Length: 310
Ligand code: TA6
Image (cartoon, rainbow, N blue to C red; front, side, top):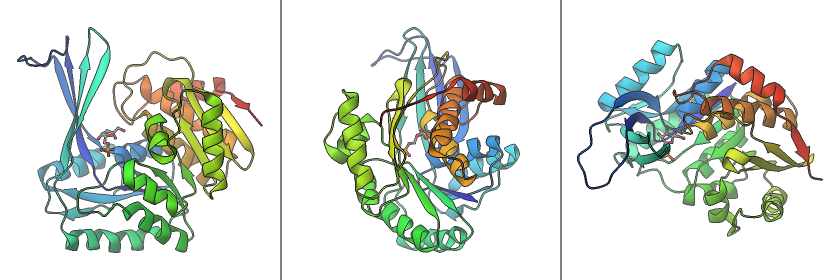
């Protein structure tokens, strides 16, 4: 079973405007609200793939209720800890003329220590049945910066392997607890190692160093180019298939879901990376975040290939 953790869920609001102009009053062309936050997107993709999953984290207020209800309507089972705080919203503005997206991510309301403790109790109960756990995104203020590190230690003690996808101090401290897998993007790799992702050889070197430090799978996401992974089998480069990109929000989360799904089924790393890449690319083809047409995913999985560096 795969447990997904979302410490800062969000209602993802998507606005389209003809052209985003700062300092003006703008009418929105179309808008949509969906259940989001990185771990929830991971959960939605696991559901699509037919994985065995449970979703946990913190939800609160009207927005938390909306998220719980929308997931229920899709058929997704959740085990969230309900707290008094209103769950945040994140805004994604699509500029149609320039075909670019701008994201505004709210921080969320600070969490009380007692509510955090309730979440920890729920997590400790749920992790007992998990083989893998994904930890994605930011955490509400109130969660200390070593929160993921602590969740990773608890997971390891329970025999579960952690896939960590976060940034900043949460990532730095999480890495110290040696999760099974990390998947930093270029910015996060820089935060972790001081290495810029301009040259593939430098990325390979940095990923290998992190691997040698005790993380079994280190995947550096290179955006639409694909990814580089250091692991026991060597170093893999997977090119992302060339697709018509409609929505980049949640592609990283679909990648995490693909890896968790494949590893939970005992598939080899190269196969897991292909599944993850196909899921991320299929997500990019769909306007709905954390969603894709299965036939797109199946096709992309067939055409995705890995290149082994060493
Ligand atoms: O990856 C996309 C996304 O999950 C959006 O759904 C949005 O809610 C945002 O990321 C949240 O990111 P954060 O790092 O603040 O948890």
